[in-house]
Length: 182
Image (cartoon, rainbow, N blue to C red; front, side, top):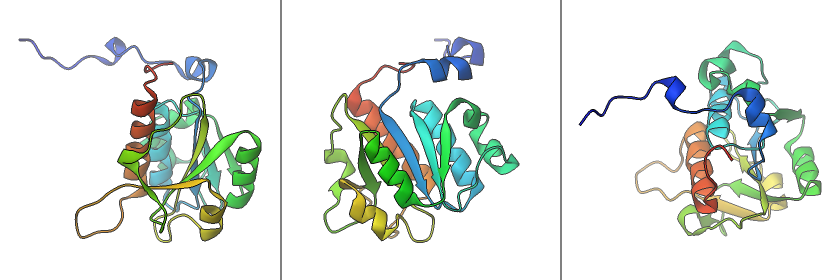
């Protein structure tokens, strides 16, 4: 068996222009005061991989085009639309007005375990990820429709935000059974 790695040209990837022209996934990624530009870049890369509609950067988040974002985003900051809000609460209000259901990824007393959550096809979700120290702000948790939690079995009680973005986006896309590139 010849199990060679495929070349990039064999992966049938969208161009940034094609990415923006194709139908959206109904998923927006919201970063609540994420400090590390590398984590922001990684979130862009995951948002691109799972075809998020946009990335919403809030507060102290670094914004494109910085060398640190580009280092981990590898150009995804050019394909995924993005916007910046000074306050996450303003972003949440704007997204709700656009018809998004607000989902925080946070450990709360009423959070739903990620593996038991099934997003509804056709519904739009704005998924809020918190910063590396405090997580999602309490005011944003209070304004959300739902909190999701990734189950963990080790001694730590958190994952890096960039890892969390990838896990949650994969879960949403796999549950929605939307074909890649759609």
